[in-house]
Structures are given as C-alpha cells and as structure tokens.
Length: 110
Image 1 (tube, rainbow, N blue to C red):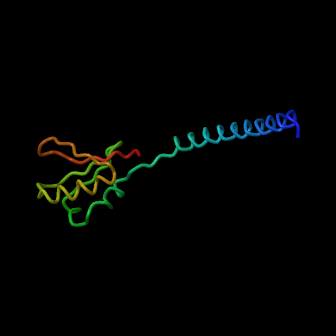
Image 2 (cartoon, rainbow, N blue to C red):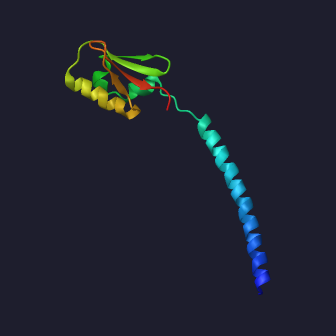
Image 3 (cartoon, rainbow, N blue to C red):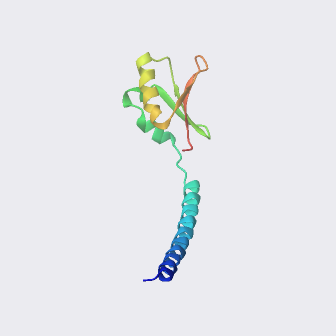
C-alpha cells in the first residue's frame, strides 16, 4: 500500500471520527438538558421516614414551600436532639438556631 492510499484511509477514518464526535456532542447536550429538567423533591413523608420512631411523637413536620421544617413540640434531651440531627443529615438538613424556637430545615429541592 502506498503513502497516498494510507493518507486517503486516514482521512476517511478522520471523517468518520468527526461525525461520531458530532453525534456524541449532540448526545451530551441532550443528557445535560434531561438532567437539568430532572428534579428530586423532598417531601414531609420522606423526612419523617428517616427519623427514628422513638422521637417522632416529639416532632412536628411542616411543608413551608422550599423547605420541610422539623420542630420539637417541647424541650428535649440532648440525645434526642442528636438523634434527629443525625437522621436529617441524610437530606443535608440544617439546624436554624433562634433560641427556644430553633428548628431543623431540609431543602425540598435536590
């Protein structure tokens, strides 16, 4: 096989690779669009289900638009507070400290 034939074949391979690259580029764009539209929303029930049953009676759960808010109905023992805090870490929950009215909140949008 001569040099010209090798060059011709390499150019053919490059043409095929160029088309494949364009297809992959289109697929990546479609996947990004799909992932951007795909949302996971946290619900009150989802949050309630991660909290151990032993402390559920001491809590209230509210859907406040962008957040699920978890409050203690009364003063609690430090170990109950820790149990709830650890459970809500599954949803990247955070504690909002406002004195006696402090509460946990979990973003509904994932």
